[in-house]
Image (cartoon, rainbow, N blue to C red; front, side, top):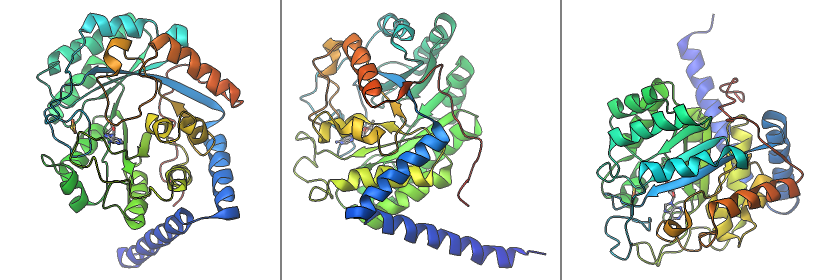
Length: 357
Ligand code: 5AD
Ligand code: FES
């Protein structure tokens, strides 16, 4: 009979093995790097198929009460022209989604319930669910459990909230007004409510080491996430970290290595090719990400007049395009890679929690 006493060392051994393996892969170069990308792409195909799900992001308000040191729309940035879209404006955008093959809307804003209050957001979720076939993902930061519950009851399908870094000390140095423990609590609450949960982290925030990056990847796996979004940190000049380069500025392969290793350790999670990859690799980063582990594309669906005011980091692509242009462009990009368009809402494929034990 296996007792707890004998199980525990085996768990620790396994954890150490995974940590060593992830760490080793993140240092791959030359042929080993090509092999890593090939494996990540093969695992993506095996578990998620060749479909790429398209989820349009509507950045419905750039009002934010927080002051994360890296973020361009932080409350302290007085250069930002603040806006909040109306519910009717948002709904008008979402109604056009099905015609563009977009089965999900991601409603994203700064973290400030005062601009678009929690009840108004609940009512909007209800209207989207009643009046369109589109699935609703919400991404508006830390909120009390009862608000998450209310939104779930209104029909919210999914929630995205990155943990940003798995290191509590580094988290505290990046976020003057919240803690990693609070973030992880939000994730747990959402999970317990049965909401499909997405999280993730930035790659290369100042102070990050390869060991922390390894732990970020392992934390995603431990949280057994339905969706995982990661992307390079890009310094924004109007923030306290504006002059601090990305920790891997001299080794840009690291951004793709992180994605590939993330896929190997989370074979059945939805992993988007995030916008920051295009910002960092002049318009081709998201295509490369789709070939190195990603299976989701999140085009910008924010109306043109607001896009330039939602700059979390500089160099964000598509600020001069319209939602229709981005919708058409993304279909072309996916087809050019020989992939197919995801059909339906693209809900979580989680059926094999902890497939690598
Ligand atoms: N560089 C890269 N990503 C950023 N984000 C915010 N600011 C930056 C930046 N300067 C990311 C955070 C946040 C997500 C919405 O955007 O990870 O969770
Ligand atoms: Fe807005 Fe971080 S600055 S949530």
